[in-house]
Picture 1 (spheres, rainbow, N blue to C red):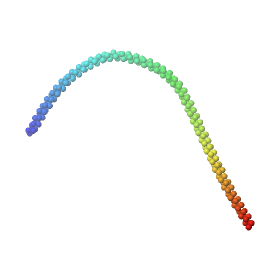
Picture 2: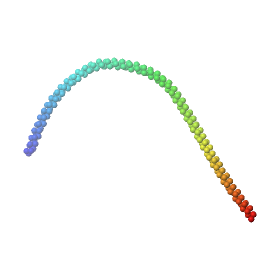
Picture 3: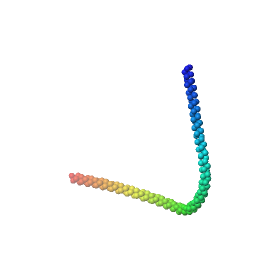
Picture 4: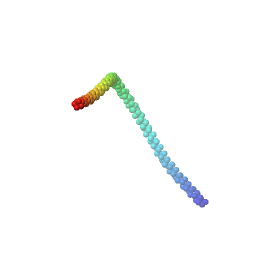
Length: 181
């Protein structure tokens, strides 16, 4: 119980100390706030005067700006008129050149078509010539084989015939020898 009373006593004294600190801080904050409020009030008054001066100056500058704007608009209208004239002339020249260009493009397409046809005809002709050459070479090779085969057959026949004649001569000699005996 004594401890409890002691803790309670400390808590009460701590609370009083905190309340006193809070009161001092509140008074200090109030004084700071009052000082800041006075400074801000003076700043607001100064800025209002500055705003009033700037508005007066702005009216004068605004009048000068309107005059410059009107002059600028007149200048721009003059430039646009001149630009329109130049562009009209350039547009006419462009259209004339476009007609010439389209004619040249059409002629070029015609030339391309003719060139393509000629290229195709040349390719067909070259293919026919190639096939003709292949056929000639094939026929020449076939004839060469036939000639070689005929030569081989003739040589074989001559060899066979010579061999047969030699056998016949031999047989005749044997027959003569046999008759002589």
